[in-house]
Length: 171
Image (tube, rainbow, N blue to C red):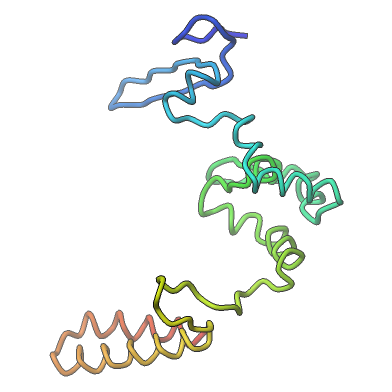
């Protein structure tokens, strides 16, 4: 194992690669020196509440186990379900597509559904709306903005609002 290139006292557990222009610099750091630079190590990530929760779920025979046994990895970032279970974090936006089935199964087990049906976030002191109420209010506001954009002959904006309404109605 390599010694830490910062403190030269402990074994390095993190390899930090920085690319600036054509210059590539690699530094090996111990967990303490990495933390000082704001980098989480695998042991710190595993100690997060979500990482611990997912690890505990996996011990109960989670549906993610079958896909992880196949060793499927995200084609964009290379992350695996094992990485997700260890850290509670996906590697990139493509991971949601790559691991859709096991993530849906996990959400279904956790929440009883894969679609949010509760109340949406409201600032303190603001009225609480259920998701259907929020969607209806948003639909009304978008419709009014669309009407004003057409009246002002802002057709690009009107097209964006029309598309946003279609997406909202498709939900």
